[in-house]
Length: 319
Image: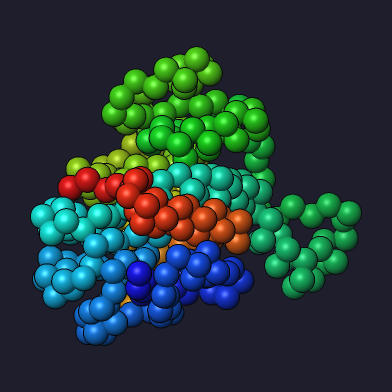
């Protein structure tokens, strides 16, 4: 079996091993692949692994040997699943591999937004502590998390993990979900309508997939519902938030701050207006990228491929 990995670098920039894949077939590895290179690189392949390279109907029609596409991610919007099913191509993904990493990233934003650690460190390095003449020199707002309300939009695996971490810090947990969550109710979490969650939460964090219904679900109307002291966090998909509205809300003090690990355009082709705002923390889509997380993802992707080879495919993406 010939296996082609079309964009290896995000999953494995060099600190992991491809040995497991090489044990089950002939493997060709490309750090990245442009659209115009894709057909030539995959023309004679039986199985493809992709993270962000798109496979459209037109592309797959030109790859007659292709029988398997393994998405090395949870989201599968890069694949035309309907076309793949019509052509008999099995598509798989890797659910739940990044739960801990994403939840921990949410709290990295919460800690920084509530404690201003980096700002205080920079103040010290500029001489501010020495100039203060005092053993303790807080210059930026600091708050405790105990008793604060954490509003979670989407109570799936990641949302539930975020809730557990928030509970450990003494936060009050509220959430919105399309369905009733018995485990959340058993833990004493309150299910609210979105409007009430937004208007009463100190921290709001997004954990829903990007669909036609959720795109721009946080716009100016929703931002105006939030408390002036509140913070918004997004580690899910950039297009869940209207970024122009967020810029306006932060600039005008409608909310206090935001933490974004994702943006509508990744990477941004030009500087976003949000880059100019110190109260908006932005990281380059790294919540999933700890070595432990990527190793878990690689192991699961290999297991998906092996399951396909032996005739018992798992984690199949349905159209």
